[in-house]
Length: 93
Image (cartoon, rainbow, N blue to C red; front, top):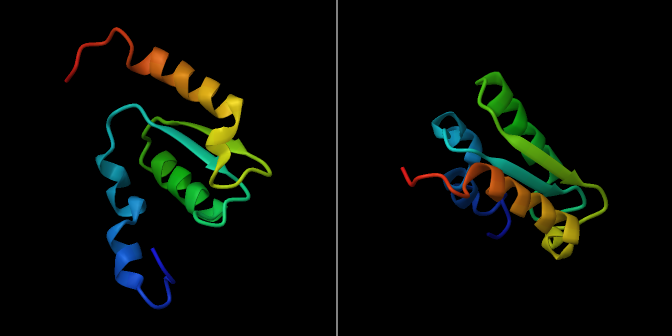
């Protein structure tokens, strides 16, 4: 997305915090804590917003993992378990 100091509009347009109050479907937040693309404070700010709005969600943080945390088997196990609980065998809305 480029440098936020040079192209702030792109970051403003993709800010999940401004849309958090519209989330009603089950949500799983995964974050590699060593991610240099999405810093950890972004995820904690989002979690705080969801909690302040009393919106349920699940989260799993990965210490030492980067944006490429998806290469970790635990990520996939967590994701598949979430989908089994929240999506599998449920009618489409």
